[in-house]
Length: 252
Image (cartoon, rainbow, N blue to C red; front, side, top):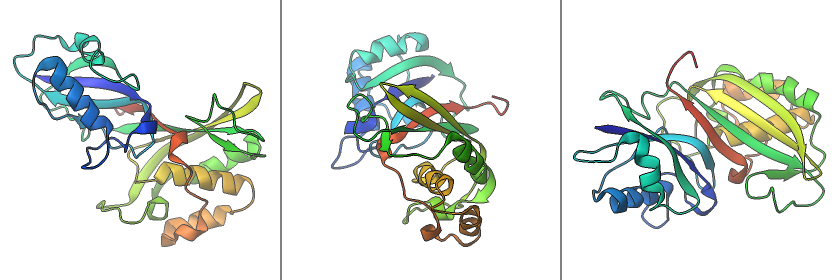
């Protein structure tokens, strides 16, 4: 049977999703929990890797298992007893034989979180990045439209990536504003059919730079055409990024 899990994790203390030789990963920790809970060593496949320090609220993964007596919908309660507090299975269900949490994914939504403050706020630092004098919401929303559509995002990708193509489609970039604990909060939601290594973090840095006048819309357009990284803003820290949702239906 193919078991599908939706998991959430605080990525602060992990070297990303994927198993690594000399570092603790989310995948390794989850697979160890599954082995303790079910008595079987099973490999888990996720919708995609998240980098070191990146969080998830809606990562989707699957594994195949036989002779397991735990129903899929009960899997969260079963597994969570064997997982650390910063990783939790929030949903479980049975997947069809041809379902693949990675290859079947149609779109993903990430959120980049910022807060505007002169000084660090301990209650926000773990999941948000501090800015000072962030651009207006109007300027941010206007600049956000530069990143929508089908483009070659090579300039937004960290060097050394081995992907076959750097062309991706971004369906929506949405900026929301709020306030908590006495400071201004900004959240940048990005939905696309797939993302390159560091793409959303570079997009967030470039969005701030364009909205603040440090980069121009033409810089972004030229970066699409030439792949020149120096035309864009900085790559923002990993801690502000969260994988929110993975969709498997084109209409969702």
